[in-house]
Image (cartoon, rainbow, N blue to C red):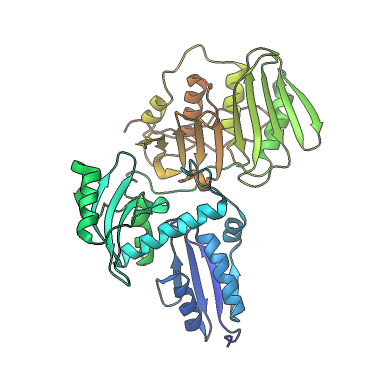
Length: 430
């Protein structure tokens, strides 16, 4: 039996925790809609609101499924355009440790991790011990609901999995865990990850606490407006005579430096935030091998593009030891992981990530709190000089206004033909 079409459900992205989703219900049969939403993972946060917050970051995917199901039951649903864009975007996890998985298999791994998370949160799975195996968190626990099972777990958040279930008793599982991890074993569950804390805060109807954030609150990252890249490209050829223009295809313009060692390609058809708009490369001589290359997506702020091209046109005489010196001076927060190091700007609007073992994307500068859902990205391969990285880091720091400190100073105008950039300043000190 279908519900009458007099209940309305509107889905929007959560303003404080992307990409969690808020469902707002109205109409005489909204209680029935809320019951269905609860079965689909949404939790009540008010008389007319429910939230879907997951540790696998797949809220848009499951919201689309929920909307389709509610429509089948006769409810009216509405999806906010920003959320619809997330639903339509097939994003992938950066540095995913199981590259052989298809997108559907990655989603299933995340769904399994979500089930484990929910079982722990709702005390269907009791964690006895945990340890750090040198790469991630491992744990030993027992299921209390249904058939009693004793398991070992490996990983955190969207990567947590059951690794061993061949235990007849809790004592066997605990003894094997002690044998495997020895002095690293600690009693009880591990401290919640930042993502777990945020999810639980949201499900409790509270704004998520960002435990690592010690300075400015989260803000929107700087993003290039539509048409800014086109204007920059036109001004580049008008004002910088050392660049020669080629347009072999209607959708592509190539800028070739007079040295014949630098080439920049611009895609006029790039529209989505994940589309690559610029590809820039430097070569070892006019007919030499490529030394390194960079890709920049559509929302990349123009000053970052100009910094790369200006460096290639006139490299500085001084050399930089490492780009993190600039970031430390601008009060960016460093965080180290086994495979990478990430520096996060005050306000968490821009991040600069180094993956020392990668070749293609050795360095990544991106706008937003997470690389997987960045507003824009600048990716640079191995071989790029520390001088350029330091200059990029300085420009990125200048893009972020500081709530305190000296009066703002304007960014240098890349070329005279460009629209003036908004004033910005760099925060000095710690």
